Length: 455
Image (tube, rainbow, N blue to C red; front, top):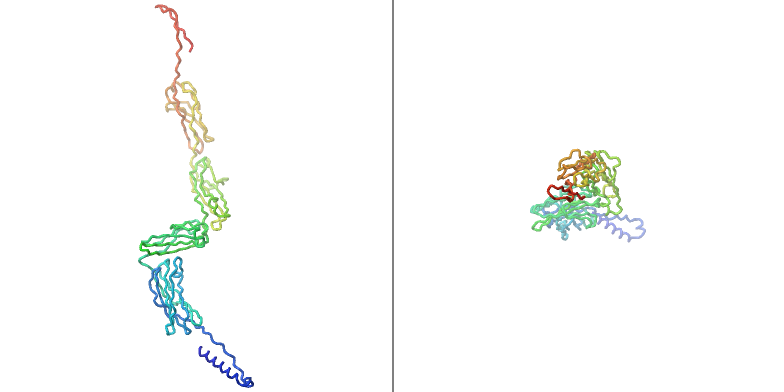
């Protein structure tokens, strides 16, 4: 190629000399057209890579040399590590290159120094790519037709396993990171790649993914530190999918006839208040034995007597306009058997005199509406035969004994309940003695008369 270029240049010089002859001769002998100079397009070639170590610990420096050849000479040699070796997630690897050395035999060499980052997992990796530029500006990159030079990254004295993440990778769900590093203290750090650094972070092994992590790369860094000061890092990342609205499980207290079923659910207003322009709605539906109760579409429900012994369940459906959470979530409480109602039963009060022959009247108080009441009077703890009304007149047999009344209430769907009044100790009245005034003769054989004064 270079010989052709020289011949073309000689011909051009000859034409210049001929141009000095008379014009007529010059016209009879026209000049030949000048050929363009040929361009060198031969790519440089990699001759060898030497000095690559077979094993390297993360963070340790290692060196190697690359040799390339080209007829125009080598103007530059560069090194680019493959992704697992190159990407400095938390450590900037040490990288340097020596001056380009002319070996004098048509080859050029450069020495490189490199350190694998501390967060590169243990394993085997290809060394990387050698870039070559020759003197004519042609660029070529090393291309391995077979596995290229490899390095085994490991440190038997400081074993580190894989960083694993468990749990549902959904917003509003909790995930946990685990790094196996025997003998080391392990710490964890979570964050979102495109969020402000302090927006949502955690230094615990587990992390609840916030709603605004939808579409954001969630990242965790595990740092293992051994007593000798050696530090190894591992990272993992994933993009959480759209998770549920942050709602607690729907609960329900033990249901019983005549009482509110006591539901427990998350009010979305309390959850979504921190999200600007967020809107939400909730609907409710109660079901008995799996069948919706007509008209029971409010947060509260009071079982009736007909519901006793059946299973009650509440369904809550929550909808929002949040783009990074599920638009609709349906929750169901556990099914619970409806128990018997508890009657409202106040202690009865007894009015009347304690003296024998007086009428005692029982006041039952206010019971649950619809309750049927019955009465039974007791003398000394034993039922008085026939005393089954709300009133009772004491008799001499009650003297000196406690008299009580028991009120029993019955209502369908409710547990029968009996309450007892306080005791009244019945007693006889004390007769008042009249004043006596005797008059007449006090002689023996005479008649004396007593006069009774009232009172």
